Amino acid sequence: MRFALVLAVLVASGPAFAQSGLRGTGVYGTAGCGLGSLVFGNQPGAVQVLAATTNGTFGSQTFGITTGTSNCGPGMLAMGTKNFVEANREVLAKDISRGQGEAIGALTVINACQDSEKVGAALQRNFAAIFPSEKATSDEITQGILQTLHADPALGCKS
Image 1 (cartoon, rainbow, N blue to C red):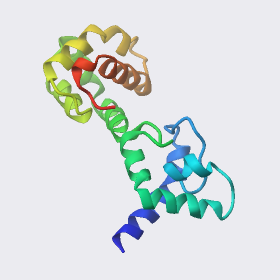
Image 2: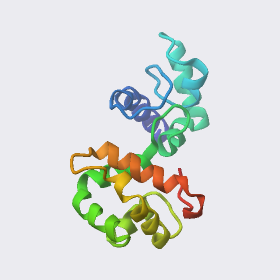
Image 3: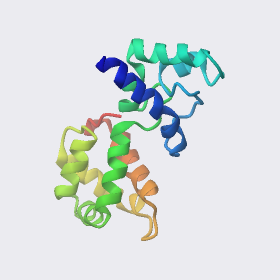
């Protein structure tokens, strides 16, 4: 019963997630993202039931939403980073400019990186690219942070 409820919530949230502007590169139908969307695409009709069944059977939608794979967009790690940037912009700017602080530690945890000191140093080196101006949007700042964290494999951040 719990599996069916989770599946129903995930299937119902698929289109809302797609409309949020933070979706993957592909197109999917009412069944949402996941392996089913890769196999069946956005074909209308009963085929979406097969897409949803495929997503649920293989757990690919849950995994895809969490990791940003299977046509599901940026994933929870990226969404967590974006939410953190929106809520902590000023503190984040100060900590990144210094290369250390609680905001750096939080970003390290949110992005499953291995070493907070290395993360701080990398973000500090790229401060100008992360915060190109005071009017930079949260999306631009998030992109700059994620690019910095994932450009250097030595940081050990999960994508």
